[in-house]
Length: 490
Image 1 (cartoon, rainbow, N blue to C red):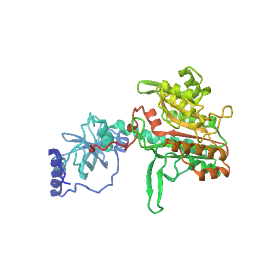
Image 2 (cartoon, helix red, strand yellow; image 1 turned 90 degrees about the vertical axis):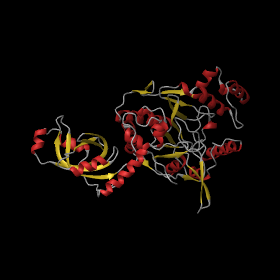
Image 3 (cartoon, rainbow, N blue to C red; image 1 turned 135 degrees about the vertical axis):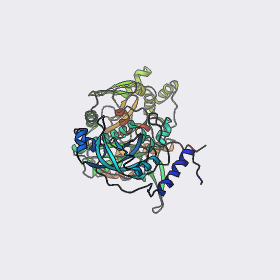
Image 4 (cartoon, rainbow, N blue to C red; image 1 turned 180 degrees about the horizontal axis):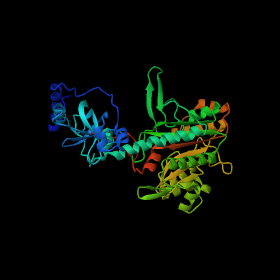
């Protein structure tokens, strides 16, 4: 396919040939240099202009040209900016090369260290090499990429011109590192479980499907890491976690991306209360490590992250909204209530599904400060242990902040007979049209038959957590490469 170039792009391509005629490789390979912008300023910031002039201090560095004014050229690297000074009469060949270059070009240069009248550490250049000639112009410095989708689509350009973007992703890296450190220090083992799974399970979600040719087997891309990690509890690894990508074939919006990062952690001889405590302490630790206050700004709201977080019973919240105790209603009565409130009734719906639908539709969005919503119906919690006081519900909780779910945790079901019965109920739901229901994982049931200790487990969405701690309103702002619709597709 023959590409078309605008006038500026054509000119930049012609400059590659111009450099070659001068014997300059437009894509050099000399990567040796003595300093970066940070080390240069650190070494010489306390030395006066006069003292430097009397000393024979030489250095070399690399960077991307971001501005040029008279004999001064500014370059940028990962740490900041450096400055070169061009002595035209002394080194006319260097001046000639610089005049050919454009903003955005990457160069290596060396020379005597000096300071300007304003105290800026500068290299009086005696040698310059072109490392990469850019063929496209960078967006204007103060405006960057105005189109948000273009920022996400061309993240590499966004990172070049937007320091705030770069800071966000450094902070994301720190958050994940601190999460890992938190669990490592508690004696958890980090595990890696299969991304390709032959059976759908561990969450209620639509999967991506693929096929392995050599084995001639269908596979799902994992929607959760739960079942493999709990097999490790059976195997005697009492504390285990995994940070990794999950894949769900669902809608895309400001809080959903087809692939996303979570941490799931499981602990033998723990329970729902243990997981609530772990989650609270983790978030408390992250605030401290990131030097954030207990009350953080998120959009136009202030979120109070002080411990302990609030707790809210799901059914009590629904009852308060509808004005009656739905837990004692018949299925037909509950359906009538749901229809009255505009809830669509699916073929497979039981009382628990209706309670959950009412909660999702009317209660979730009212939650602002961190709140553990507990007491989920058994119909929507196939892997959670039954509540001893009312077995229609489970010992499960979800952490909501500003109307969004951030974490899901429960006392793990470790009774293999009950677990098989739950899987069978899920299978019936699938046959009745719930394509998010789990399949029957007989190998997992067999693992439980070897005995899994009473345990607690939790999953936390890292992308949403990063959004919260960096004050970003869209998941695309915290993913380096978010998925976008093909812009060439009609």
